[in-house]
Amino acid sequence: MAIAHPTRLAPGPVDLRAVDTRTTPGFDGDKAAGQAALELLGRELTELQERLFAHGRVGGRQRLLLVLQGMDTSGKGGTVRKTVGLVDPQGVRTVSFRAPTAEERAHDFLWRVRRVLPPAGDLGVFDRSHYEDVLVARVRGLAGPAEIERRMEAINAFEAELVDDGVTIVKCLLHISPEEQLARLLARLDDPAKHWKFSPDDIDDRARWGEYRAAYEAALCRTNTDAAPWFLVPADRKWYRNLAVAQILLAALREMDLAWPPADFDVDAERARLLGTEPSA
Amino acid sequence: MAIAHPTRLAPGPVDLRAVDTRTTPGFDGDKAAGQAALELLGRELTELQERLFAHGRVGGRQRLLLVLQGMDTSGKGGTVRKTVGLVDPQGVRTVSFRAPTAEERAHDFLWRVRRVLPPAGDLGVFDRSHYEDVLVARVRGLAGPAEIERRMEAINAFEAELVDDGVTIVKCLLHISPEEQLARLLARLDDPAKHWKFSPDDIDDRARWGEYRAAYEAALCRTNTDAAPWFLVPADRKWYRNLAVAQILLAALREMDLAWPPADFDVDAERARLLGTEPSA
Image (cartoon, rainbow over the protein chains, first blue to last red):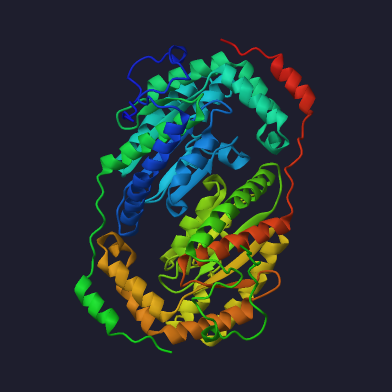
């Protein structure tokens, strides 16, 4: 089963309607094959993430930041559970961004983001992110065009700064169709175990689908930098979404080319000392 | 395969030497059976943790805090990977406590702990904890007996306060033998992929095994409260340790008796509104 490297979004204008959300680019198998491929990928993902974590423990600066964006029900939470859940939770820092608090609103929009960046060695996962401040802010008119443009520039500068500081940034738009969203919202309403995931606001946002699409297209075009590229993940098929994000993370980790950190002590000397040390009773 | 509820440490004086670290109390199967039992438990654990998370999202105050203590190589990290790793990382907050920084030392020893408590709905995991301040601090003479005693009292007051605020606290001592530790430290020295986990200090701590044991016995006896009980987990067998901690977490979650949060909206009305809403193009 061939698994192609998921390609980043091409630079330039973005037309989300031109992307089929049910396709599985780079993968020609079915759901069962996709789940098997994910499990297989999981092993390498786990080892490379542990190497990253190990480097963080011995003074390395590298970190990995996964930004997940997408409309309601696009599967941000499911991706965390199924893909991020493959690796050691010790080295994972998941942050869900909701509507900013009064304290957060009293600061620049990036203030709250800076406070929760992953430390060295960690995989940080943003379920929503600073992009909400150029998406929902635009659609709901919380900020005017000039302020949105200022924020776009600020985001590019911020992300470039992070990259210079050793952060690898991977941004994924989980792209679903309005039909798929309808099915998922109905499923949430039909299952009492999922009512807590539903908010009446979701329907209001759904009514503004085209406005969100336009806001996403503008943001993706403007912030799809070489330093911090966007990936467009067709997400109507959950198994493909999980596999694609795993592949993207794996490619980013492979790119870091991390060997196990060498010992900063004399291994033979420590072995001799260990064998010669009697634990007190 | 019967799985008994792991019993909390009996109140009163603690004699760690009387506990066989290779036993598997409450479980009469072998390694394969233990691993299968863990996988089975994982399903209920995952569902109950999601219920806790759901409650946190809709205003619930409950949280779960797992405190993992034990000598080097006792398997705190492995427990996070294998047991905590069963549930959704979205609702997990893992914190590793290392030697305090200069800023942390400028505050009371509980200051840094308060800053990283799990928020409502989360499972917080402490890999080492405030207990280091009455363990390593005692063994290395970083604090005198009066200060250690003050800290013990402060810990009990702190934990009682947390419990009153909706935190369920589960404290596990992962109990290994010095022989098992020797084997695990040698394995770390023999495998270049594990060198980063080894520190020459580990051998110094090992030499003081008896002093650590006495420090643990004193701390366990003093802080084994009804509000925040200790569990003693024989941990020479990794599979049993993983299963036992899963069982302890599961019992704590069952005790919370959480139903799915009821909808705070009219389900039928929202379904009708959803079906009547046309997404803009």
